[in-house]
Image (cartoon, rainbow, N blue to C red; front, side, top):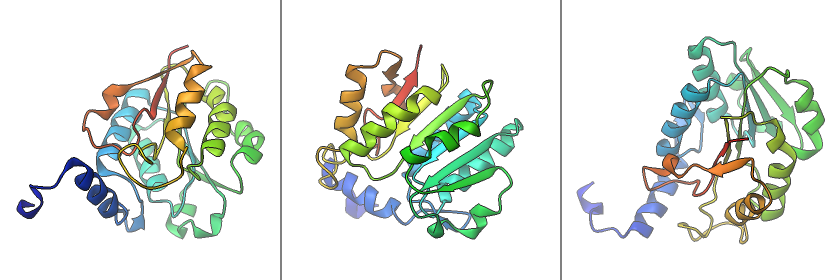
Length: 209
């Protein structure tokens, strides 16, 4: 650690991102910020969702972690993972009884997802797909109605060109700003950015109405 004490914050953010790409959960690549994941676990305990929708599952390390957290809550919670190419999802994830993997574009599969959710379910959404402005905004507009009051729509990787010199521009950050201009049902919960280094600036959207 000592050799890194003179790093600038920008250098630290880049280093944090690069090292976090190596993160795994139970041996499955997770590609998550450990600090943000800690916030996720606090949100999951706070909200106690019946359903977590993960848009962009990749290998599924995060999906598996959410599954285990829901199991520990004891509420028979489920994870619905959407991945444009589900062949990359690890087999360890696929065999979990409370995980459903849906192949293909998230917005095209919205009705399929909706049919898996009961009216009484508390729903939390984590968006981690292509990170383009257009796709992120489409996902926000189409899926946000599923989030229940008091729960969250988490948009990942809004640090593209907002802390990290990488990724689409405009990207998720700008999509969040556009979405929030026309939507009074959500507020940005900046308290979830308390570790300062986050992959999701402005990305913790709490439903209030």
